[in-house]
Image (tube, helix red, strand yellow):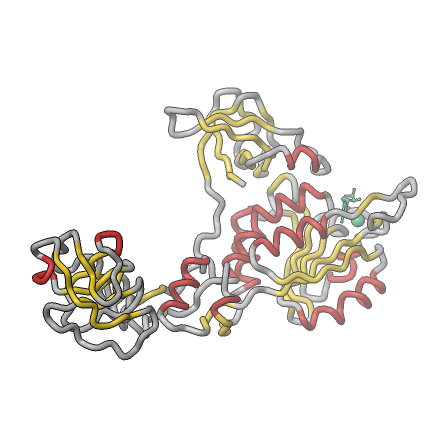
Length: 397
Ligand code: AMP
Ligand code: MG
């Protein structure tokens, strides 16, 4: 048996790093920036008005009320602004360039809104309602740092400093395959002995949430020749193959039988659920083979797949938030294995932590209990029992 931590390292190394490529700014949301971005222009690029109003010299409006001739009109987008002569005003709109010589804006609400001459009723000090060039970003400075997970705000800034494309880590293309002769795809009717396939639905959604591209083969029967025939040609376009089912100790273990000796190594990881695992390369493509029970799939995803996939796509923060919490009931755990139990964490007001209780039993088929959980309770390898009131580690989902 190998430890969860060593297995997580192994899978992370197997997945490596996705290649870097440039994408249009608008398509980069959620991806990780691969190179620093410098601002090609200052923000704002020029001194401009923060208000609809009148550009003036502050000295000309020191004593109010005062009436000034309106020498020009400056809508946003005008590129041929004339200097402001002393003793005059120019009507100006928000975002329009400040005329040379002007040092203050009087907002329209403090005037009679005149167009040939304007009566100004409130004095303005130097700099009033002026947005200075470079106030937000200086030209040539670092606007975005490599490693940033690009949010809509980051994309907005990239667009604002004049970028059309960004260098990002390419999303992984993942092929998700469920195996099991018993699997049926809804809405086909079930016969006794069959179940509805659910693992591929969960894995595809979880991977897409991380930003992966996903192709799904909903179910392959437990037949080695058929497995190879269906999956092998699809490997070509995949960065990663994830299978579920067919890796434990019974007969008809299709994934194990098909991939043993092909570059994939099968072993036991010291965790519960999700002990039987396999990983390696098949035709050069990284492969991670998960056991079939739905909760094993979800726990495997949390324990090592999610961090490895995030790391491959350039993320540095790959861990769920961990907190300590007091148990609300006694629990047991198999000695020598790290147990991940579905739990519900409730913060306690006035305390740094909270309380947590299990949802459902340890059985790896209890999928409904997972949907009622908001965390995983982690009982370490050396712990075989924990009592109500004990502090345990919790991974917030
Ligand atoms: P296996 O790892 O193939 O022995 O499967 C373990 C258990 O998980 C069995 O009860 C399977 O029927 C179930 N199982 C396997 N694959 C799926 C799947 N894709 N969706 C739902 N249940 C599954
Ligand atoms: Mg099976």
